[in-house]
Each structure stands twice: as C-alpha cells, then as structure tokens.
Image (tube, rainbow, N blue to C red):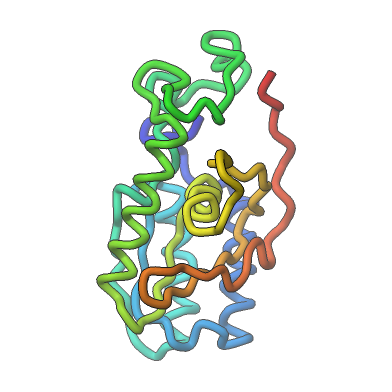
Length: 198
C-alpha cells in the first residue's frame, strides 16, 4: 500500500514509461497550450511530474512551477500504509470498496470520502485555471474517482471497476459546472495484475 509512508517513488520501469509519455507529448505537441503543472504529495507523482516537466517546458517554451497538492494523493490507506496487499487482506479483509460509508481499515478513507475529496480538489484546480490547460500527475484511484464523480452513472453506482493504465492520459474539459471526458487510458502500458479482493 503506497500511501505517505509506503510510497517509495517510481520504479525504473515506471520512470521509463513516463519518459516515453513525455517523448510522445513532445513529438506530437498535443499539450502545447499547457499553463500549469500539478502533482500529488506522493513521491511517485512528484517524480512523474518532474520527468514530464522538461518535455512540457520545451513544448511550451517556458518554465513551470510544480504545484504540489495534498488532495490529489491516492486513497489514504490509514494503518494499512506500507503493508502488502496479502497482509492487508489477512488483517482486515475481506472487504469491499463499494461499502462506501465505512472505512475498510483503521484510519483509512472510505471510497465515498476519497471520491468527494478528489472531486473537490479537481473543481478547485479548474476554478483556479479557467480557460487554461492543466496537467496533473496523479494516481489511478484519483482518475477512477474523477470518472465516478463526473460521469453520469446509474442510480446507486458510486464506483466504476476500471483498470487505469500506468503513464496514460485521461483528459477532462469543463464547460460551466459540467465536466466532459475527452479521453481515458490513452497510451501507457497495461497495469500489472492485482490480487482480487475476496
């Protein structure tokens, strides 16, 4: 569980994936209008933003201050932070993230709390940068929470079971109070298999 204590940053493979994404962005010029660069507080997100900063600055022809935003971090795992998934399941499982009103281990955010935090920070960032393009280096859970909060879902559905790829691009654009999904999971390599929740 890679929370504030457990995150050890990108692996060599992860850094390579992000570098490949940076090369693609530089070659295509698709983010030539970028105005701001954000990352969560977790080392892997900060490293991702730092790897992308060079190509993005070359595209834009200007330097960027990296804005670190705590609420862009992954779901807070509470006492499970830095534990392996098998240990987490043995100690607190089986659990279901769709039990949205409850924490799944002591100190952890529930899915509902996490999704509300993510929606709140994304709205805040959008309001700070009206009419601008913002790149956010974040996490699969943050992307999943954004999809669950901003896409029209069936009544009672609060979480989508999607597999967000590492070093992929998800794009949102905003019109008034509505968010529209421009692309999801573009580029990047398939995620590694995870242990299913029992």
